[in-house]
Amino acid sequence: HFIGVYANPLYHRETESETMMEGDVDMAGADNGDVMELDDMKKRLKEMEDEAAALREMQAKVEKEMGAVQDPATATATQANREEVDSRSVFVGNVDYSCTPEEVQQHFESCGTVNRVTIRTNKYGQPKGYAYVEFVEPEAVQEALLLNESE
Image (cartoon, rainbow, N blue to C red; front, side, top):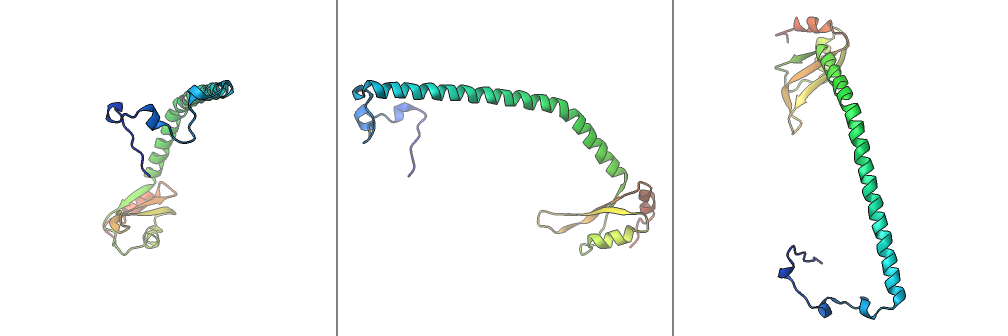
């Protein structure tokens, strides 16, 4: 079942008798014990909401402090790591679409130890025709550049 939710109460008005359902408690006819129990429940609900708000505030403060402390260092370390990996990598264009990473690795093994071969693909998993080869040694990049226009 779907319920109707209205932002403006003018669209939907009911009399109090129409809104009362079977099993609903008419507070005018409730005894004092029921009213006290309801008040206790409201008080506990308010306490729980206040505690939840305090926890959210503490969480936000901790996240802000953690972010302020970690982000610059992490970003710098990550950027430095990327630059270091880039210094040991080469871009390989015109890679045959049927070529496997293992074949690319074999082609560049004479240059140095190949750490990783990445053949870029489109969103359908089809090769885009280029790859990146990451070496363990930075010196291998110069050797790999000598293979330019090789097959």
